[in-house]
Length: 115
Image (cartoon, rainbow, N blue to C red; front, side, top):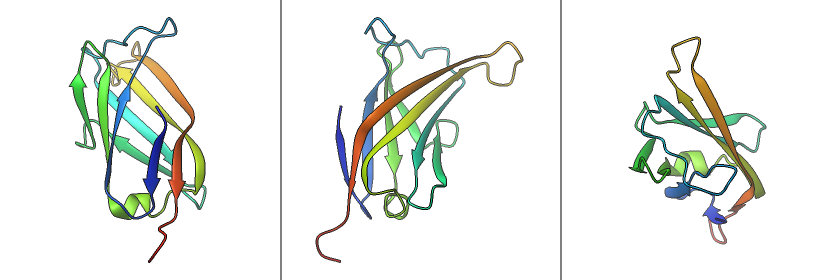
């Protein structure tokens, strides 16, 4: 799923969440989805479904889109980066279920050639 982002551009990233068996992960009953990226200063950028930063394209198919603004991509760490998608079922409940999907080195962040 490798994605290239040029620092300072608006970008929407389509992501397919899969089970360990390789099947689509059903997100029909999910209460929150977070996308976590690493910034150049070692802080993290977190995008949330409940804030409108993430849209669900297919609940049963586990397909989401994460929207990154130009000011956010400008701060991302350069190079091949990893990121995580975290899903929470009933996040406000003590019995809630959390899944973490890791995308290792799937994001290539590059500088603009002309700025």
